[in-house]
Image 1: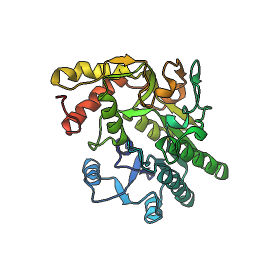
Image 2: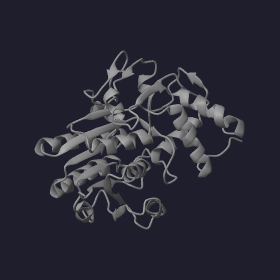
Image 3: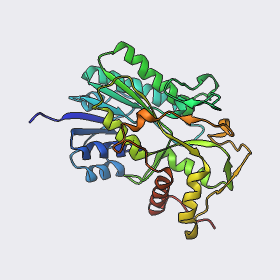
Image 4: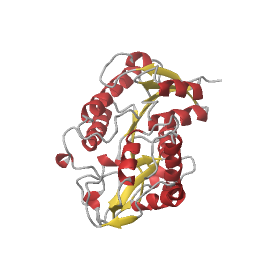
Length: 324
């Protein structure tokens, strides 16, 4: 029997990373490794408990220490590690860009066969007039209008690093995955910046009358793992669904409102500094046909159900409070 190939998941104790590691482990197709900032963290210990065969390595996106060891014998790398939260003063660009450069440097040294990089719709849609358009893989955000050091700027800059690297490394397959806001249940009880944005939007009386970009974390994780065996190269996948921003909140309100949790259920035409303000009133579609092919069921999960499961997780883990 041939030896299983080894897959390295960066950021394996993060929201998406943990799901990606889980999907890879449960596929039975690979030896799975993961990186984490601390082997002694509760999340690292919990991940090892859930998947005893996973090998974890302690590394930092801004330091070379430990990366060579983590990459030893690796055949494929799924690069999910990148900071995401709602802190407006945090420097997202440096770890995203330098971390991607570092991962790609060690991937080249290890002579991996393929690299899959988690990007974002923030690499695609920002600074563009979306009205009447179909958002697709040819579209890129206008980085000239994005705030310095912001999360929004970090994603297109990091993804462009990957595509520039590909030009010098044509023999290594590269794919990028561009999700919208990632929602759904958690593996380790944490959901990074998703919790921040969910709480922020949940606290509003009304939400803007706008379309928004959503995707279930399980769909994104499956896509990363399934891309490993793709015969294609240089795919840039629009891993997201477009639906009104208010719709999942109405569904969650119906489920949890009777329990004392409050959510916005009406829309407003006013802009309130929300992530979707720039395209309020715009009507557009998403070309996500190619992305769907790489989910296990060849289609995306229901976002309304994903958000119901996610908020249930938040309640169980003490992350949200009832309205008073």
